[in-house]
Amino acid sequence: MLTIIKERLLQLVIVLFFLSLFTFTLMKLAPGDPVFSILRADEVAATTADEEALRKELGLDQPIYIQYTKWMYSIMQFDFGSSLINGKPVWKDILERLPATLELAAGSLIVLLVISIPLGLLAAKYEGKWIDHISSILALLGASIPAFWLGLMLIYGFSYRLGWLPTMGMGSAAHLVLPSITLGFGLAAIYARMLRAGLLEVLVQDYIRAARARGVGEWRIMYKHALRAALIPVMTVFGTSAGSILAGSVIIETLFSWPGLGDMAIEAIFKRDYPVIQAYVMISGSMIVMVNLLIDLSYTWIDPRVRYVKERIT
Amino acid sequence: MSSNNNTLSAAAALIQQGRSTRSTSRWKILMRYPLMLIGFTLFLTLILIVIAGPYFVPNDPLLIQMSERLRPASWDYPLGTDHLGRCIFSRLAAGAQMTLSLAGIVITATVLIGVPIGLLSGYVGGRLDSFIMRIVDGIGALPEIIVAIAVSGFLGPSITNLLIAIIAVKWVEYVRLVRSIVLLEREKEYMEAARAAGFGTWHMIRRQLLPHIVSPVIVLASLDIGKIILIVSSLSYLGLGAQPPTPEWGAMLNDGRPYFQTIPELMIYPGLCIMLVVMLCNLIGDGLRQLLDVRNK
Image (cartoon, rainbow over all chains, first blue to last red; front, side):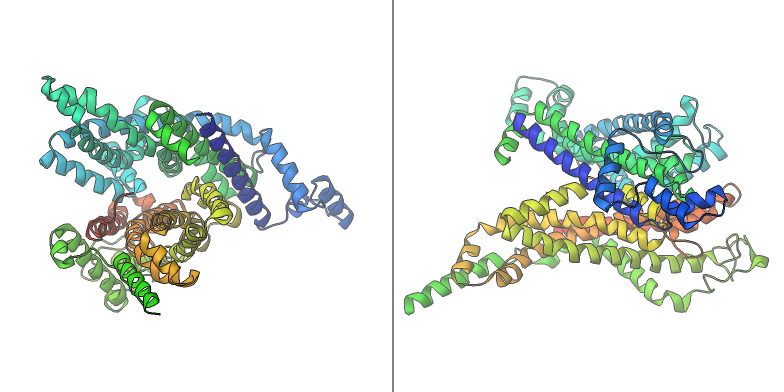
């Protein structure tokens, strides 16, 4: 177990290094000279001496690797600079908006569980029957429907036509319903299919037959014996979904005017607020990588079989 | 001399065996997947529409006529006009061309980058392999949308930047896939036989390994086309991809937003187009997977 943790931590460091290098390079490639943009903002006629002084002050006269090291150093202390638009420190903005994104992610997880587990169980129990077909059609829809369009159609139907739910913004629990469904539906349909496949694989195994022989009821076998074993392969994929939920939240937040991180990032892009973009990319990237790591480690811990295989690989 | 010949012919037999395909009668199998057949036929129709479209659409997809704005469906405008008086039907047809060619560019580039690197990484192994895999793991951990935000955030929103961002992330999947197959095949007998027969690295990769890689790559690519179309249209909807007045489906949805409550058709049509095309790609991908007998993992 320790070797796995060590290997994965090393991997984490490498991934974060790539992420920082990538962000830094893009920052350097961004059009416009920061020195000129600051000088112009002051609206005073700037001399070459001013320009040079400012360049020195910002550390832009130094070789690129020193600039990178310094930048990395401040990032590690969560110093992302201040927004070019409202002058607030970026990390404050991020902390303010993070809860909204987490709330949305939690909402979509609930949708995911509420749809995928019953649907997966039913589809496996009644393999080849109509409920199974419905689940496979839903999975195809889930993989094909653009999330932003689904969201728009839901707003049109439930908010505008029926007037049941608010169209956008955050606040009551009712506000959370449509964004969560929009974000969770695609994944839910796919997970239901995965769970079904896992269940069908487990259901033919000997210990299930033994349980049946002992007279355990069909539903109890499904729920108590098969589901647990079938959930493990599903969990391994779940790590990657943390990334797609966070990435998907960018679209959903913009669509529903949900005041989270993704909404902030899109706003920053159109205002060319570089410190905010840089902070968003670094933070969301790190979050995804770390969630992946945690989930990976947790199922390694839950399932000894995985641990054994992994230890042999590393 | 004759024993040498024998060894060579034995090696040739083994190589042939490794290369032989599993299909008994592909057509028979094909007939078992009606959904895929339908998907395939529809996809071919779509490509025909894309090629022939410009000659048949009733109007110029870019022609702005403020006098004709927001018209309902009519003989002149089969699906009505948008807020600038442009023919929606013509724009959708032009959008099909746009969407498919963008997806085509991305998939070609990712395959061209990913497959050779995967072959090399798996076949050469050792330090090169672990170096490449570190990079692959590093990039593969990031979702395309985050990378696209970074690229368009710093370099400005444009369709080129969006394509670069998607390609920059997507290629690693192909490296992983190809490498895993190469690692499996590398140890098999026929490979050893070919090596013993004195074939060089280039021959080994091109003639012995490549044939094993073609089907899985085709399957992955066909499933990816749908995903790429979704990403491109989503980001174009956000304004980070195709810029107006380009007739791209996601961007058209964005254009239609202000008229959402009064004329929902402006948003329904492009969305339906995206969904149907992605669905076709998924159907074909799933069907191909079964047809070519490629396992899930």
